[in-house]
Every structure is written in C-alpha cells, then in structure tokens.
Amino acid sequence: EIVMTQSPATLSVSPGERATLSCRASQSVSSNLAWYQQKPGQAPRLLIYGASTRATGIPARFSGSGSGTEFTLTISSLQSEDFAVYYCQQYNNWPTYTFGQGTKLEIK
Amino acid sequence: QVQLVQSGAEVKKPGASVKVSCKASGYTFTSYDINWVRQATGQGLEWMGWMNPNSGNTGYAQKFQGRVTMTRNTSISTAYMELSSLRSEDTAVYYCARGKLRYFERVRGDAFDIWGQGTMVTVSS
Image (cartoon, rainbow over all chains, first blue to last red; front, side):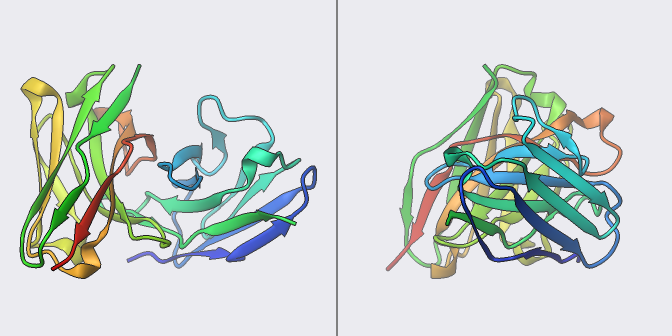
C-alpha cells in the first residue's frame, strides 16, 4: 500500500500571506495526485487533480505542483474562507486509493 | 445540478449491519464510478472501496474485505454500501463520492469531484 504523508500537521498563517502544504508518497504516484479542502461539518471539496490542474470553480490562488513522490499545494494569498483541513490523495495505485492524514490550516 | 444525496443517520448495535444509500442526479449514473470514504470524528479520510455502476464491478480496501458490500440499482440511480459485523470503531461519517472521469476514460484511478453530504453511522450498545 502506498502511504501518503502530509506535513506539517498544523500550519498557522496570517490572512493575506502564502501557505505551502506538503505531501509525500512512499513510492512514485506519477502525477496521479489530488488535493481536497474540508471545512467543519462539510464534505471534502476537490481542489486540484493531476497534481497541478485546478478543478472547476477553484480560484487561481490555489496551485499544485510536483510529481513522483513530492507534492506541494500553495495558496498564494490566504482568504478567511481558506482556513480548513487539506488532504492529498493518490490515485495511481488503482484500484486502491489512499489519503494523507491531513494538514490543518489555521489563522495565525 | 449534479449531486449525490445520501440516506439519513443510523444508530446500530455492535454486530449488526448498516446499509447506506447514495442517490445520483444530474448526470448519467452508469458512466461514473462511485467510491465510499469514511471519516471518524476528528480523524482523516479513509477510502473503503469503489464500484462501477455500469457493470457492478467492485474493489474493496483490504481492511474491509469480507465486511463491506457495494451494490447499485440503476433504475433509480442509487448506489449502496453495506457494512456488516459493526463494531464501535465503525462509528463515523460515511461519504459516497463520484469519480471525475467517465469510467471508460479512466486510465488509472481518478480524483473524486462530487461528494454526498455524508451519513453519520453510530455503533453503540
């Protein structure tokens, strides 16, 4: 099973600043990686797929990069609505999917 | 609009089974995989398995093999997830989620673009 490890567990950033979240895979997943945002009491929302392609309706301040085993989600200028938990997910090893444990992005 | 609507909250005793439904609307139900993901309170996301609604083919996470069954009724565009031999550790919110690509376009796996609202399953004696 491919293990996805996210860091840090919690990230404290001020509104308007940049946030950088990391995700590492235990073996290569090529570019078959997605990022999701989840707010309390809500279902996850797809942000990024293919490691770097924004999903429909996702603002341009969200960007993804990386391939192989190292991936990054960057939020260029944090808005109040961006404070949430973020998960990465690999879908290269289909028919098995795995999620990272999540990074909580909180207001500094 | 494209949406998945799940059945309501359930309370079950240890050893019982639960069956959660996920009704699709706004798209061709048989063209997109349905996945099931669960989340215990305060914890992360855990993928349970997938189903191709066209063929009925399924694939389950090893952890749930033998305890989970995913089925569908194409006439009412509804997918089901049944989990048996429930224990307290199965207390969680269960989500259905659609694969982004039509299954015949998928080369490998797929991201999940549409999610149901979640169904809380509580296992307690």
